[in-house]
Length: 185
Image 1 (cartoon, helix red, strand yellow):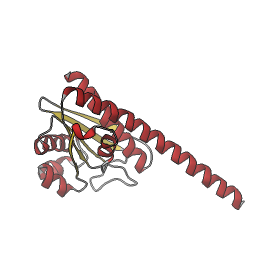
Image 2 (cartoon, helix red, strand yellow):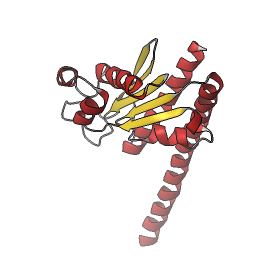
Image 3 (cartoon, rainbow, N blue to C red):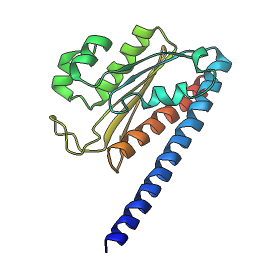
Image 4 (cartoon, one colour):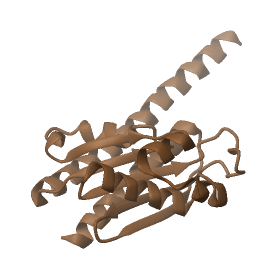
């Protein structure tokens, strides 16, 4: 019986490692495409991450040559940090909740302004294991991509544990950037 539990645990660990490697590989491939497109067009990117906690920045800087396109990143996990660093209006957070279209948009616009970059990605969401103080459902996420011309915001609902939700949010953000770059070029 104990041997079976250890065996199951070992299988679970190997499976978890494989799934995490698949997530990382997907993120890296998307980040590589983003860096290539940004480089080709001579454009700069900045990020503001709440739910992803630096995963987008990590994916981007994992790509050789990222220093030519990546300006800076903000990890604004607390409400106060969003207000202080990205100028998110406290009334927006109070009225809409921190996980909202309005906050994602304000984070992206604040990042674009502060970093003086060509594009900005922003993420906000609830990774769980419980709803946040605003009653946001676990897995609800907003991703915003801003340029000097427009801001595109997408809402998602991802299932899985905290890390899976964060990984899926990172992939969604990189895909949104690629879509915006494709439309702008």
